[in-house]
Image (cartoon, rainbow, N blue to C red; front, side, top):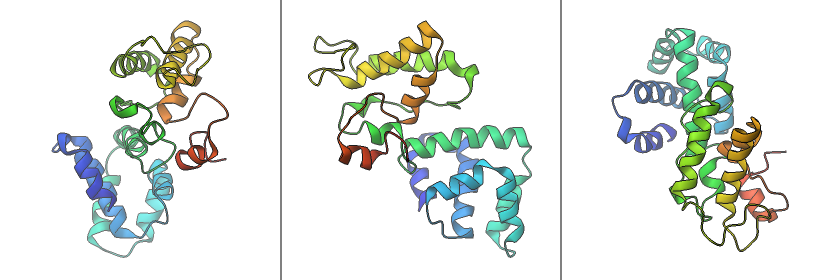
Length: 204
């Protein structure tokens, strides 16, 4: 179950408000119905009104009671928690594309998902710091790295991190940084099997 897998991944945060909120929300939703996909579950929690409609349609049950309790949180707190929860779900591989599945086996073992709302422009400074940290974590600048041509013999992961970083810091454009953080690849013409597996160009 999703809630159980999340509990394992969030073991270090057990007892935190985020852990408690996530477990209450996700475990209750899983008890409420069988979800055809995690994307559908995400679409419900992303839109508070959709969650309210779901809860209103449920028969009395412990799951309905717990979800009703979640909806008692003020809108600001709910939005903040869900904004952190959705990227986390993507990062641990339930929704694609995501950073870890995209770079699995390609040097991404040292990557740590960005902790924040990727689409919030006020966090561009935090994104720049995160990209710099990820560049260092994955080895810095080895001699065989190719920043300009993304050479097959070079380290494409570090090249894409650098590309996103310089576009953000030097040009003030967060487009590539946001894409990288979300698990999209920044280079064209990757192998079709890899693209199909990771959805690294999106779902379309």
